[in-house]
Image 1 (spheres, rainbow, N blue to C red):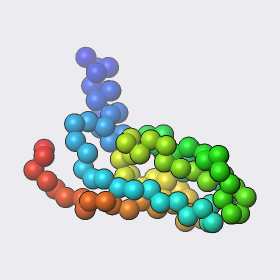
Image 2 (image 1 turned 180 degrees about the vertical axis):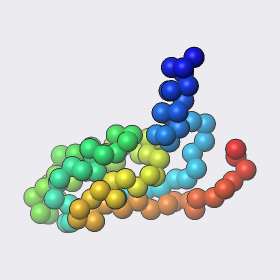
Image 3 (image 1 turned 120 degrees about the vertical axis):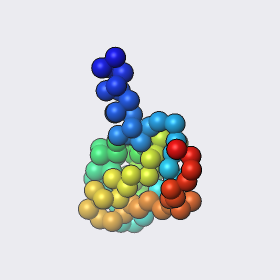
Length: 99
């Protein structure tokens, strides 16, 4: 039983569970990206991967490979030293009655 409780806490911390509070999109400004990989490394849900295409500046930018796993936590946006990635809400976050 303690293992199940730990898994439930971890799932909740990673944004898992029965409900998803909001939907968002991840925008990558390829001309700003230098391919450091911080956004990929620190994403708690492994949403991002390195793209095989080259950006205009010669680096491989990330792309959202598993957007369905994204919890809109904005960690990628916060760790980017070049402000090359941002998360935008598709639907405004609300305290809906879906408890």
